[in-house]
Amino acid sequence: MANKELWDKIFAERTALADDVAGLKPAQLDKPSLCGGWTVRDVLGHVIGTGHTSPLNFFGSLLAAGFSFNKFADKKLKQWNSGSPTELADKLRAITTSTTSPPGPPLTWLGEVVVHGEDVRRPLGIKHQYPADHLVAVADFYKGSNLLIGAKKRISGFTIAADDVHWSTGTGPEVTGPGAALISAMTGRKAALDDLSGAGLQQFAARF
Image: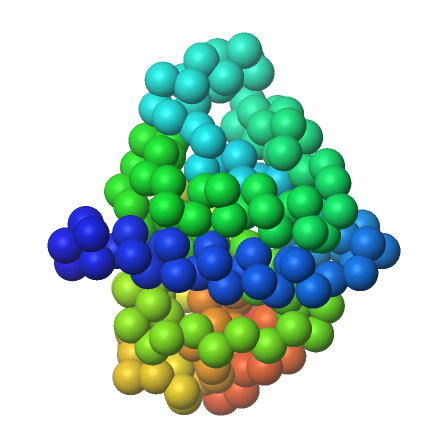
């Protein structure tokens, strides 16, 4: 996938998330997200912070955090998570077309905005129609990755198949569901299991 095409997908998902955030009530920002220990506000601060983090800034901040990724992430999100829904939406829109990012392949940032988009939307009951090619690209990226989130190990031994887009991977007992829910589950979000089914679901759920 050409870099411009990929960044266009990232920009589109950031824009869609900003539109959803703009419609929130202030109290919804402090609801727990699906990302363990973070509120909706925190997740948004993390996504916004990513768009302001260059490779040089990343390594400097990580060094200052004693090479603890969790400390680094918590400090970074606190730089950007303040404000009303409108203000946070504006901060998201400010990075909509930014290609500034920490080190890593651009697919990482499409995956981040899809996964964290669900971390925000699902607990608030917000539905978003992800384009099929966005979901397929992210699912293909995570199926082979154990970095930080352990998706490859989590789905090993199962056939994971989307029922709303043309995508599947693996062999073994089947776990099926919407592509966005599968991606959330692949990345460790237990709440997404509610949208899944199949002969392998009970065994798969035991890994959470």
